[in-house]
Length: 127
Image (cartoon, rainbow, N blue to C red; front, side, top):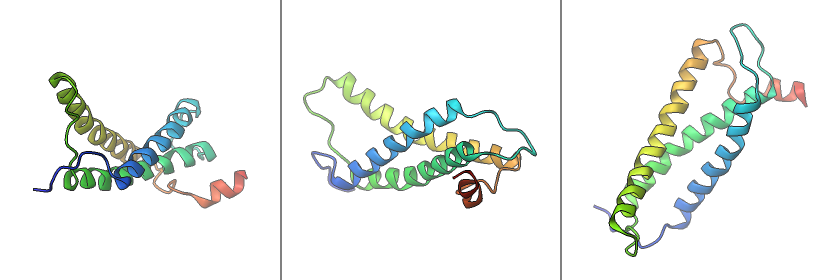
């Protein structure tokens, strides 16, 4: 079992903040873009939204693996309920986010949107 560190290292911090920044971009795009239906050509917002979502999914996997192999000691000055709840939230949030992104990917493929990821044509046509 790996030795616990006292603080998050630079790699964990980069994973955290890159994923947080992408989510901060992703959420408004998702709220503002229109619903898309089969046969409809998705616009730039949908292309960027899907591409960012897949990037988040692809970053969550190594982030979880990094956390498993580089554990951090829980904050010792927190009450026990806060230590337990912070660990619980951490281990439920990232897998939930990954599962949600994977589910939306499968649903998008079912709608015929499988060619949407990082579509250069849509970005070039709208720019």
